[in-house]
Image (cartoon, rainbow, N blue to C red):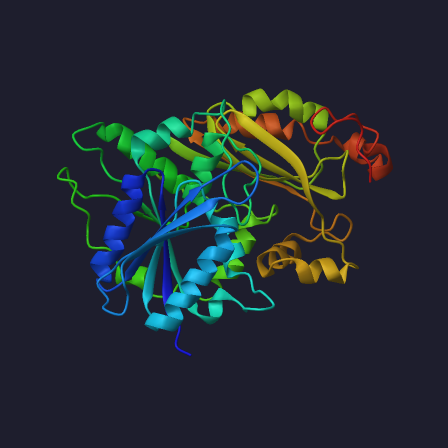
Length: 395
């Protein structure tokens, strides 16, 4: 069976979501836009509204709504559309209250009764529109809580800053306009910051002050390179660390810090005010001496930092854990493998404006165990009080 093509578009404002759809329709005029909104509830299933349009004569314009699991409803819509209209190109416009990567992983996950959406569609690149002024406000906001749909239910409470950067990090293509008659400097900083947060994405901005978009590459309306679903899953693993782009823009930079010995949680807590100064986004994983078998994820947006036990370090004898890990993680574990410590290591990226890289590196280095502390071994490490995750760790 010939497959359809599924593009995904989202944006931090409805206008920017519309820009993404318009740009794809310029390249694929017969594509079928499927716009979605989710009228959520804190408990129970939401109302999922959909609007279908397009120039293809085999597709009838329609609007309808249903209450239920958003992923199940959209899967049914897309499969039904493929069966009735053939191998069409669908542009799925998702609302801003979607956690894009987990949602796509769940949308593509194979079901026993109906199989995988991948049997019906090839995934195209994910396009994200970023309105500069709203984005810069959101990445500084940590005093409110939002809940995004990551599948059939809302996820945990997030700050607006976390929600904003997650959307940018999900993109394969970032569209960042100059504000109409507005602050060009702010737009430049927002574009540089978005590009630095997601170095793997293609950044597209208008080339001149009239705001006209350049002709986008035809690759946007072709199937993404093989393994898109596996790539989405890998980017959600706590041991995956984003790439670093150098020279992204005015004052915007990323510090990549790595170390192959465990951290003292007390000294790390004392180092955080300095290490976090000016940081907009931090991602990575830690090896805390108080929890030597646990991967501790580091995720920060704005001034808010979350540390949590997110996984277990791979052990050579644990064949099941190795099979469950993504190919990317297995490759990294093999690359960094130590005969005694295995894959354990610290690796974080800190992105911000006018960061003091030497000071960040120095203060984090001082939180590492000394040679004398290292010689105590894991039995000695686990007795160290842990003010970050509570009490003394356990193995």
